[in-house]
Length: 278
Image (cartoon, rainbow, N blue to C red):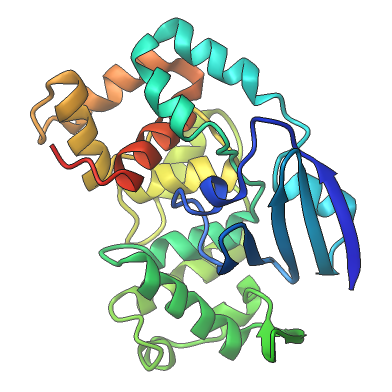
């Protein structure tokens, strides 16, 4: 185990970053400490003022600094968003420690396929199950064997019936097909709309999930995922009809521009964490 100390500053909060819905392979140990898994790596991370204290089981300082996106100046993003939309001030103040993680694209792809019509506790259990069956061991951590997220090759060799036994339901077929497709096409490339279309071409993936994968798997900040909470926000803040998804997307593109995904995360965390439902 290696002890690492990373400088964070005021624009990072571990809880907000992990619990804003962008990732699922973490366990809360105590109020400011988490056990985190990323690809084939794991660490215990704890927020302490302007530093992130890490006990890394594997993965060096460079890996974790990049994973948490700590070299990026988020204050500039916030200033740009507030210039375009001052009404974001409360959400940015409340969730201003959110950063978009540098996650592996394939892990995000499969994780958000699993997320469909699912809640976070069940999503986490499903991901843990497929990792324990199809992922490589990474060691005994916190009293039990832990596993890396499965590789595309490993999931491509699985079959739907095996995955059904892990309580993945109809998503089982989506996962196998996605693994096969990824083996051929790899990580999407091109302009934002081109990458979005490539993700949307995966079997079983719709616009909301495609936008999540664009934002969290490719760090395409233009992506603006619209789920139940975001619909509620757009109705509450801007008076949209809840069925006007295209109108919401157009508004987000015009109002938030290239930082729509970050605006979405601030708003999503602000409303969901405070349980604002009007």
